[in-house]
Length: 452
Image 1 (cartoon, rainbow, N blue to C red):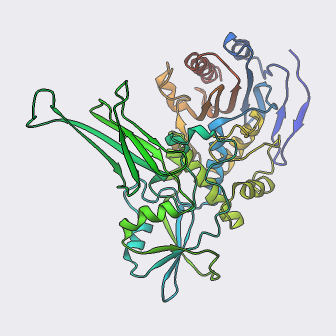
Image 2 (cartoon, one colour; image 1 turned 180 degrees about the horizontal axis):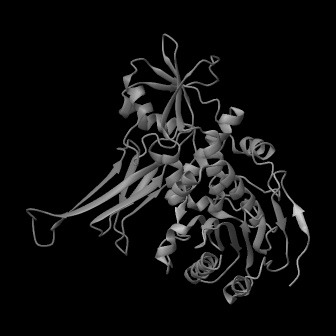
Image 3 (spheres, rainbow, N blue to C red; image 1 turned 90 degrees about the horizontal axis):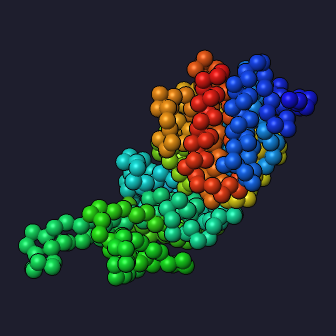
């Protein structure tokens, strides 16, 4: 087995060893054998696989296979978004800026995704708006972005993971639809014994049509592609809930939905209001957003997080400008220049290498408290799916990522010896069933836990 010389990739002294197959330090032949078996597994035949496992104390790779090759990372992109959210948003989320100008209230939205979100009971910004008695006008000049990201699949528009981005999101930019079926207390006849209730949160003034039940009798809601018109199909489920994204139309839809909540007139300014001394209202701890973003891979939270970070740096909610600034400043040390276009990883335009993730994980380890990392990151690799070693669940703190033909996992691993390792496994263009692929990756992680 041979290896190439070390390559210096960042000023702080992190070195990367690039090898054609597997680099092994010391005499850990069991790990070397496990790595070779993993790389040559038939599950990965004809696929593109990159894997890097790094010891940040010894500054050396235990495994490095195609670590400098580019891969679509899917939701592993959220690791970068999480880090910059931790670095730039402070302790709490900026919810809203406002200014009293005698005759009215001027509002500047900040992109806070938790406004009126059903997961959060306390709503400081909404409470403020309810308390104000004057007409309100919204200055949205900082918004310089599109509702959908570059490279997103257009036909995902009806799915909850593809909610639109906006300057002033409300309710997670989705409508939550409910179906409840109960037995009638006094049925008119034996064939009419069930009451079905269909309703939405929030209540809508938009057009809602009821269609005949589908052949499979499953509750469904379909929004029109070009307007906020919903087609609801009754199912046989006793209880069913579906989240469907709505068209934001900038902030127009949010203003419509908010009007009944705050009981105030809200207009939208055509230009930028010139004053600068606005009062900032914060909503809640940043990690109360970042944790669900990482645990349930919330694309909407990730997109809004990157927009808020970009606004903090550049004064505009614009991913391209924010990403450019980050790559010139905080993230200038990526060993391989990434192609980075969104916050969630929904786009197939994103391209990162395993070395990029190792560098970012090491930077996070050095600059963020370990207790915070382990709280925000989910545990157990791929979670309960294929986890044959539940006792080792808390030894893996990682983010998974998947889309058609893509499966990735990057994060931190604490070996049984107490040694902390950084790993990034990026798999593209595989065609095998996802279950066995997940299990095979998890098996390698258990080898790392045991043999280090």
